[in-house]
Image (tube, helix red, strand yellow):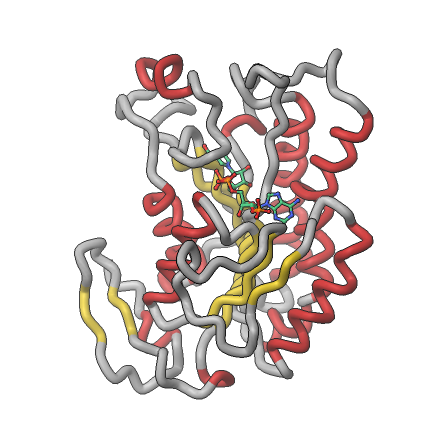
Length: 278
Ligand SMILES: NC(=O)c1ccc[n+]([C@@H]2O[C@H](COP(=O)([O-])OP(=O)(O)OC[C@H]3O[C@@H](n4cnc5c(N)ncnc54)[C@H](OP(=O)(O)O)[C@@H]3O)[C@@H](O)[C@H]2O)c1
């Protein structure tokens, strides 16, 4: 599929090619910062976020990312020009004003084409089991909702002007657990993702007249650190495609939603789950 990246990037692409994943990539590496598309990506250090950062980076985008661990250039092999990594715990809403100020500083007045609210946490019991509504502590409720729901709200609000200037796109990462009881995902996690799906609909409505599209992707079982040890053995027989997904398969859908190919798509929640929702 041609996602129109060279035009999207407003760069005179020095080279573009269709790679094995079927996406046209433009090399924006040599472009001045203000001419490159920029992505703010939370939770870029592992799993789905890492695959997403890599894909966008290969397509010439500049990545501004954040997570709790110190930046690791081996795990996140995209350029870090302008010191574009922010170390932060997004489960504490009091950190958000600082993060937004730091992102704006790094943007230095440039528009923002994409915001991916990917960072998420799914607390389990000490032995990896589902944390039920009977057993979840108030601290867990608060930290899960702050990270999975409040941080996306505040980031989008805080970066509104920059997103509007680019007619940008927001992608919220929800979950299949937001729509049905899941054998491993806990109650706080599931309800936070259901709320994030609802928030996506509300935001799509509110942001549309400003030219900003807001969508969600809802992964099923994707092979990352967040899965419980028993997930594959227990769930793969129930998944129509008979396998878990890869972070790269999720990243490609996020990329599509941020591209011109999705210019008339807003308020959607795209399932990425091998048919698990059927
Ligand atoms: N994998 C799946 O099967 C699946 C299914 C449905 C939905 N999802 C959703 O997909 C998203 C990514 O999940 P993943 O599977 O890629 O998980 P992962 O491998 O555990 O990665 C989570 C990312 O979020 C960051 N993060 C976690 N807590 C944070 C915090 N308090 N503040 C800032 N950053 C934080 C982590 O970095 P640090 O540890 O360095 O902070 C890491 O980069 C999540 O929203 C998750 O709910 C995943």
